[in-house]
Image (tube, rainbow, N blue to C red; front, side):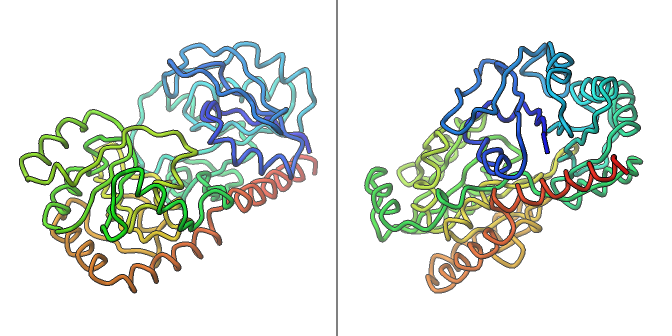
Length: 372
């Protein structure tokens, strides 16, 4: 089966792990923009001969970009299916819907949107156009699938998490843990709390800082960048814990496994906003895969991702988060048990290999249905 996979996210080599797994199930061609904003596409690595780039108009602007020359690409190869890795109300999804119809090829779209918010009229029109022509859809979560049904999509729909992990990279590794702690100036006996993500208000970093301040003999490792960086530094200084807070900034994906294994617990304290709730929480899956205990707020999809393999606290509740961290700091046996449970859950549900197999199976169902 020949599949064209269209995705702006895949300009980053680290995100192409899933496509490398998918290429083992289908004859794959991936189309990505030459650049997204200031970021240029990462060059293909060995085994990515299926990667192709094209110029995009309005690159860097979610839901507005479209490709140049995509119709020619569709006509060059007789794909059995096109997978548009974008929301159904995005301009590029409607563009591919139009061209797929002209060459009589089925396509599927992907959706993360987990809130039934009202979108502006032009985008509602794009969504209706896509819904009327799509052979199927893939939702990243059950909540996203419910939103699609509530918006009126009646076609075949699969729920497949699209944020997987490479099991060969994200795993327990005592040597990497020791080396990373030494490089960061941390002792083996330190209780290390980790966070990874954008430093923005919605991620709840200020709630984590408030909860952490009461922990003695602990270190806080913040991985990421964003507008909350300076407020976090000032708050840490006011609380007298600046010497125990380390901002690692943005790091390359290959460094993430080592940083996560250096932590005793990883926290995602996201806060639901008017038009946003946590859509997945990839860092939780990666930490679980590394055998690290996780704590998350009850925002959006976090409880569904963690399941019974971690601790859930009410969003915005610093006292509850502090209690969870205090418990884990004082009970290494419970930490280890949660880490083991989380790794089992990650391996069962979130590996790139598993996601690729489920995605390819859905493709086959769609193509068979189209050929009936």
